[in-house]
Length: 222
Image (cartoon, rainbow, N blue to C red):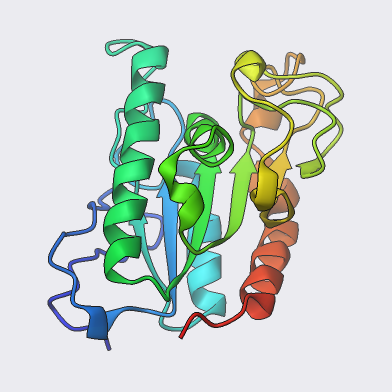
């Protein structure tokens, strides 16, 4: 059981996740920790990323999790401002955890804008590249670019923010799955918002299998 000094709120997809405290003690570090990021306008917490976060925890007893603390806004603040705040939050929260628990295997799960901030943080050369991130799942990222090695789904175009991200993510490529279907109006050029909202139902089992395979094959850092 985790010590009370590890101030991580474990949630089953609830909207009340809190950021990691900076008072972590090395001896309480879990073997697996998941960062979840919600979609635009979702209440604070995991949003539509929550089901996969829950399923990873269920598959890996002792795993812990936390939500990325950012606005997830499309207006006031603007989407661009929210996105930038989100990337900064990813960098700071991952660093705060990893520097206290360097041996913990880290997993990222993001939905829509939440997927975009993970995409930008991982693939734009930011500081989290030095940490022990073993898997990243991106559902419906507006930065989706067809043709990347980690693409999954039927989209052959790009999302409305595809110009912000490249199609390569260096050493992280084999650790990412980015899901997008052609009818999605946000990560692709479609017109069916229901497709954008349905990635957990459509691909959740595949994403869970991918994450668990990466966790199983990642070497221990101990």
